[in-house]
Length: 256
DNA sequence: ATGCCTAGTGATACTAGA
Image (cartoon, rainbow, N blue to C red; front, side):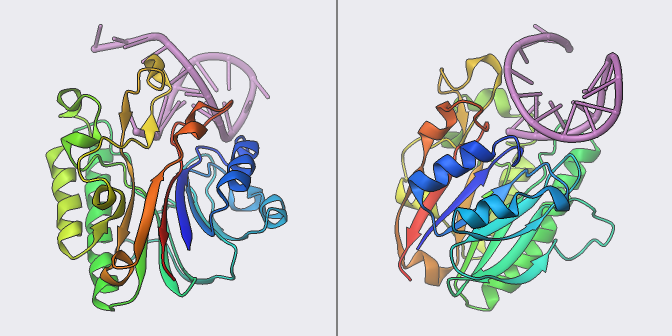
């Protein structure tokens, strides 16, 4: 089973990019972030025509997450528990291919310091609490998405520039480590322990041409899934396409 | 320190992204 995560940065503006990539990569399951579309503007028919079931959590203007699957899905959860006042569409959890799949769009958190950074940390703490419960169930679980965290210096083209950035602040890296220590495997880092792997290149300053990238999109695997991990990578070329998202799709293959 | 780029909203310069 091949699963991908792709911060699409506007699903309607980038529907041609998404459809072209789906045809090339043919993933079985896809987690999408940053739909930037209200619930009723999700292109369900076009994705159905491409062979996918879809469940999504839209929001006007910002955020928004979706999970697509070639097999039917059962929805487990919309949104993270722990804050009834949180209105952002950033978390969706389903069962498909006999696995629990979570689609995560962690808050960006910039500028640091400030209320957006506080929201990011609070959201991360809620994720850590929820992930602990999922891990304890000893099910096959994949937490996929845009974590807006570069976990280590290897994940940043120029780490010294990012020390005060919410994507790399020590509090956020520490939160990511706390999550991992529950027993999750960072799939791409596990497959490539020493390589610089990027999933994001800013639109600004010719970041793509300079390979000034960041690794922000991650798959965290529960032990049962980690034992069955076969391969993974980033479809870098998608970042070079016309009307590209600033993220490229990342993917892994696991034995069913 | 700022703009550099891009999308959404809505029709204008804004916010937000990372």
